[in-house]
Length: 99
Image (cartoon, rainbow, N blue to C red; front, side, top):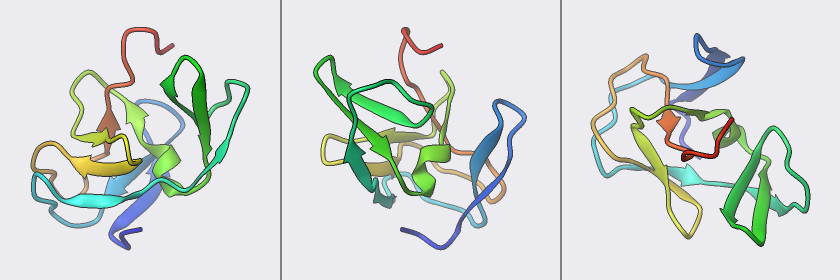
């Protein structure tokens, strides 16, 4: 897990994950530490209808936005999908069903 990520109050939702330095598009920010989950929780990552995980590391604080700057990959790596500036909150597009 990268040390340049910090948890702070988010203007979007509760706590958020923020960068403390500039990050280039394509950089891997870390791999989600997870445990299997059978129920929807606040930090549950759904891979498909039948497979979900509770994220147990600080990457769980990545909030939802249609203007995503990171993405979760199938191997549970989180990667920057565009350049991220120091101080920016990290966002992933969790899809249409996210509420």
